[in-house]
Length: 296
Image (cartoon, rainbow, N blue to C red; front, side, top):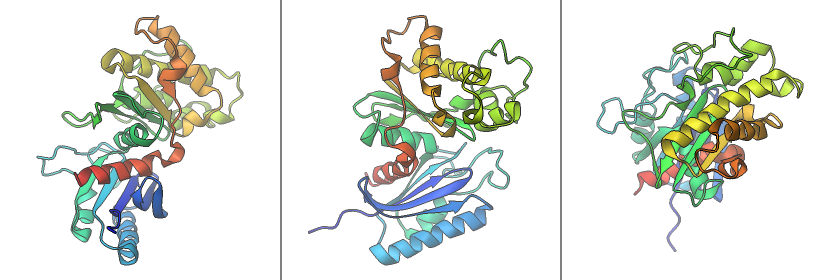
């Protein structure tokens, strides 16, 4: 009997790398977490993890990397597989894909963390069976990935949904925003660090009647309506630490329904806007999906 393929999986985040060795979504053989510190230290620890895994389980058929961005996804670019203009110190221009392909002599699937997550949710989670789906994470930053007929949207680079420029909330005119590139883009206004800079504590620690909840929901609802206008998704999966705030998902649904004005034909925003079906496994399983795709 032929043994199932073996995949290396990397969810490369701004604060930690989640590493896994898997044969399929239900057979994850080993996992580990490595802090995202200096590139040489973090990548060295990840390479050591997979070297030990290869010794234990055999040769990898492919490795998938779902990375924080921005990244270069152009297969014709000499900088494919590298981090682009990230504000994270020390990581701009770092080659993520190359070291793993060289060390293990196997194909490498490489994409953004949110494109990986939407792939995973479409295969095994909350977006299964949909032809147009979006995954948005709201945490340290805000990012979004879109899937159309099973293929992630790339284009000249990849979507940067967190950097759209929303209308300012009437009760939020004075905060300048924290994005080093755009100041008051969506990420600069509604990410976890933006909330902390504005109100001093995470959103989940503010009283349920604090105006911050309505303000953040209003900004995220603008993203939802923009996505409806441009991509007509059947499912929008909202994840990330900020969305763990009790009641926030329902507030986003209500605000999106109001902002849409009934124009997009969405009868039930609770069916359109959902929580991740895979929970905190979406990132790692996204890397698995990318590894599987690299073998095709």
